[in-house]
Image (cartoon, rainbow, N blue to C red):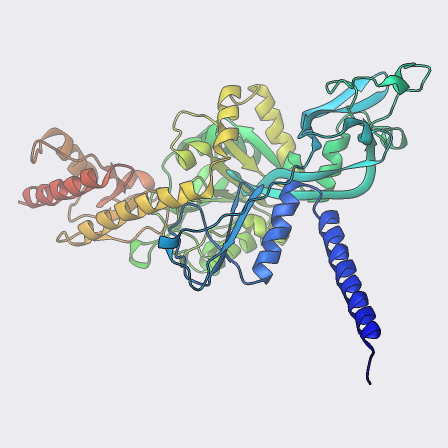
Length: 530
């Protein structure tokens, strides 16, 4: 087929129009799916991923190559993308093109609902430079991000919200209430543009409407978490809620010695689940644990990663404990203040919250001081989906009024710390751990398993009584004007006679101090054995 010049021009024109319309549709779809800055960044990120761009992290060393395509994000609200030419030479300099698109909106403030004369308005602040008059008398909705409880209490999840429903409106006053409306009236940003919740009359709700809408969209329930005065109070209250005098709680030993105190308050007894340093403190088989359960057994309690051993429970072990709890109608309590401190890539923290069938049996304990080295900030968390249990917990918490307010504000800000913080801290602790473990295993007669997490190492020493040895270190031994303070292992056991030749080490001091301490210990053992 042969076309005339005019026909070819017409075909070309139609093709260009199709391309323009197609591009316009893509732009409109992008805008429709990007109602907030956070959605824009997420959608741009997805497009860049699809087109072969590699994401780089601001705090990591960049391996930039010629011909490469890269992007980075900051705070979920900023994205930067760039390419490197095949012939790029840094000597010739480079060009940067930047663009900024404003996103005017009305930001919803915390606790935003204002009730006046049967009207509920949202307390908002104007962001950017909007033309205020264009926002009146039109259906409005809500989009943005919400910070919600995550698997780790100290690292909440960010959920993007896009509600495609007419929820709000900013009404103009009727003309007889404002006769100057057609004469150019100045709009008060503090009072005149507060949106009215449009569905309020339909649902007859005055308070908590916005919160309910968002919770429905995210699937999060605020009643699943209680703030306590540290993890210790959370554990103490949990024991009081669960146990009567002479009830029993199973705990893998060795265990955090203060568990004894928490159970003593409730009058309950510890039934130890035996583990051994020879197999890195792994749990025994299910049938062996089942033998320990009877009518008085109310719960299984464990720390993960473990204080004092640094044990990180495998997925199979966590499921085993969950199965035992469900099958025997027990609570299973995971004390997880060190969950962020797992040092090897092959090891991973597994949460009971991921096991759906056990959701009514699970209690999670967490503490802020361990995560952020904020000792003295008495703020902890207890998480459970068991409504009856949480009701009883709330009664106990109300009896002592509230966790300290100042510390709660501080914790809220600590939770904004970037993930890179933990990456750096973990690397520091990992180096310290390796120094301790390698040094101990090079000392004659000493056995130390490698802790997978937490900040402790547990070791056997060539002594009959670690308690006597620890006292001797503090009262009689000096090397290079120094000595070492250790925690005797016996205090971490319930079973009589265990832990007599074991000790706990902490690697929360600097590398130089650890190296010196290991040398002092080596010399001390030489003298003590004589």
